[in-house]
Image 1 (cartoon, rainbow, N blue to C red):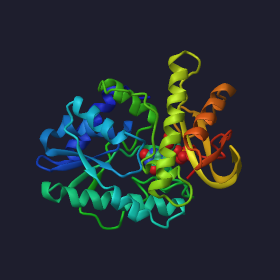
Image 2 (tube, rainbow, N blue to C red):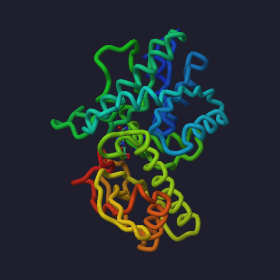
Image 3 (cartoon, helix red, strand yellow):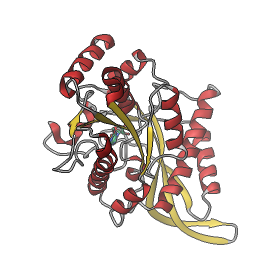
Image 4 (cartoon, rainbow, N blue to C red):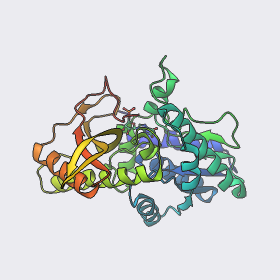
Length: 317
Ligand code: XMP
């Protein structure tokens, strides 16, 4: 890995040249490490020529929009919250194909930014795309594995030029930069740009996202509690996926026929490959008990994904 300080000065010089002496920009924050690092660098280089927007897509984890805005404001980034939940759910109506979902989300992001940024006369949109995003979106692989929303889903015509200051970096390098910039929680787990949409298999509706938000909170709380008690090493990623697979169950005297939650935990260094974690059985059992209790009538079965990447990917879509 390159020296982080050298990496930072090269990125800053290039960003300054790309945007020019008077260019105005908007940054697209997702709350994840990549876009946060990109936004911090943009504010360092461009000062008040940057307007940072955080779009509430409705596809975030429970409470996440508020947390991100508060965290960034406490770090001195005046993040503006844009409520675009209606736009995103409308764009996903009836869509079940994973690539179509990603493209619709990418397009909706851009349209929302265009709408929001017209008033600030910004010509540039800064995105936190990193190398695995475009490599896996067909940048130099023959087969497109996944169109990561911040690459594959971009519409042909846009009112902006996209600037991607981190596009040659891998995850571990971005984390090193976050450390250098003294950003909070540099080891927060990665979260995909299209959010929970790629973890709700089948159609993405508000109701189904709400189910997954609950299950996600259970997995995160259980893992983080076990880590804080010294019973578990923090996995690289740990999350829930809602499967459109109904199966028979029983609650009290009643037969149920409802959906399945898959729990996924993986170890990785750069997300290009990953190994399924082997969490203790008691942890999985307590996650299963809580999910089926808190989502009674909605989920009656919890399974654990034991597949490495490759052949699977980390996310299910
Ligand atoms: P996959 O599922 O391709 O994921 O093995 C590799 C890593 O990337 C995250 N991921 C994304 N990140 N935009 C992002 O910024 C996306 O569209 C996206 N899709 C997956 C995933 O969580 C994992 O860390």
